[in-house]
Image (cartoon, rainbow, N blue to C red; front, side, top):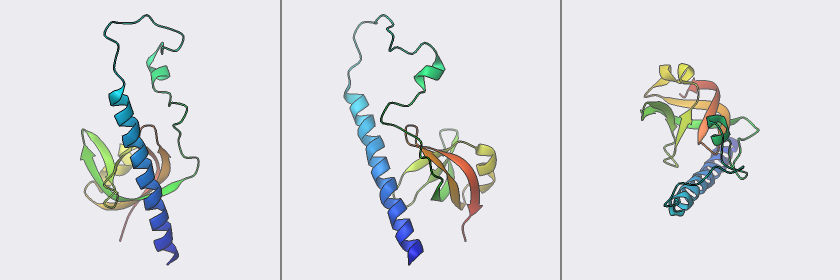
Amino acid sequence: MKNLFLQLLVTAALTLTAMGVIARAQEADQDAAPATPHQPTAATPRNQDDAQMPASGDFTTHETKTFRGEVAKEGGNLVLKDPVTKVSYKLNDSSKAKQYLGKQVKVSGKLDMSTNTIHVEKIQPTL
């Protein structure tokens, strides 16, 4: 019963996370790009590392979470596909994940909500 409650809680949290990611993507699509090029300002990133910094509202979870799903390949990346929420999470460590391609697994790691990437700590097959 306790595991079912935890799974429901995690599923609800992941659903809310996915909804937030979709909302941010829709907002970004609605923001029109300027018709003419602009001059760099202090807020314009000077290098690629600056461009990858998450926005002020985005963050990586500080606690390790457990995610369940199937390891699959999407666009050349290994992902964890959650069958309940229908959300795919990028996996940052393909060396740990590739042996589980096409299999159901339990992934422990921290979720970077700005990129929807799980920073993998451990992967185990589910029974």
